[in-house]
Image (tube, rainbow, N blue to C red; front, side):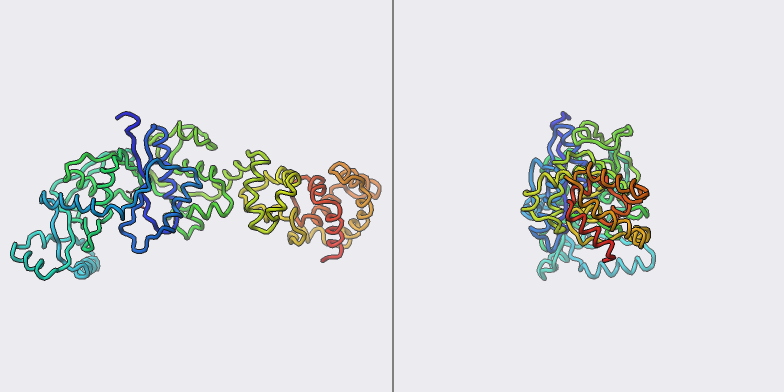
Length: 477
Ligand code: GLU
């Protein structure tokens, strides 16, 4: 196979949100396509979904766009290709490798449930395959609803998984699966195999949840006389409690992460390492580095653990590495969303905002941290930290601050250096520890015990506001 023969696909079912696991599947397919100069195809598997809407599909497409995962073909919609699937089902019927089944689904389900209750396996017993021509004609005359089942051939089915190695299954363990429903719509396995063929897919890279479907799809390819693609099943993503990642673990939708203030580049970097590694200890990698190093052979077959702290750390690294200008731009929607600045104020106070950004950047793990970490730059009615209040809200500190107020009011140009000078000279003259004055000032003007350099912070907050805040604090309000 030449490199450009690589054709991979992402085949989401429109479920209304874009799960972290689906995003990783999309990313690995995309990295593999880009690495090999191949094509990445987007296919929406919407035949099975009762209420699939454009809105649900948009959520997935938006998520892909946000992550920067672009597709070369599609989106193709399975719901628009029903006649194609029916054509392949007819081919299987004509070859005698599929048959009509008139059984009542409710009856079969009851049989299945009672077998399970007896702790027995249950598989469809092919009773419709064995109908006599007269019995079949009678069912047709009565217009009994019918599905089409695939006749699973005897023997074994084997394929080579690029991540898990050789996989073999006994046909006797595979039920004659329904491939066409009574409403004429295909089931997942049929539509998937047909499309993987029609779309020229060379490698199917998907979550390991589908590994039990693969032998069925391989059998369908064989029955149709078609070559099957290569398969690679990606490990599961677990929460830190080692159960499968789900909403119980918090955010699992990519768009939730966007709204929480994660950067798409950090998300992509984190997702890339969730099951794959470049073979050295690199953790922060550009997309180009990922593409250059991506290799299916380096995917770890064991389950990956989604560690939100690690993601947060990585996001912080990306924020820290940004220029103040870029950071400011990325932060702006969050400032507006939290009511910290209006869009007009962001424009009007650009230089000031850039300085604030430079000061707080390394303290933010996510963009939405701005509100709690540095909201005091923008609003006056912040809360005081409990621990700081215990230490600083006392008569002695109030007296020191009240004494310092007129001194600070005289600071000529109110720059970081004149503020520092004012603090040091007042502390020196009044036998107060500089550190003590700094800590209580920080508490009064920011409500926090820690933060960026206080002199710069005070300069950016501005003289009048600082004086007001110190007065307010000493009044205990
Ligand atoms: N539509 C399937 C899903 O969303 C994907 C199937 C596949 O990749 O073959 O899980």
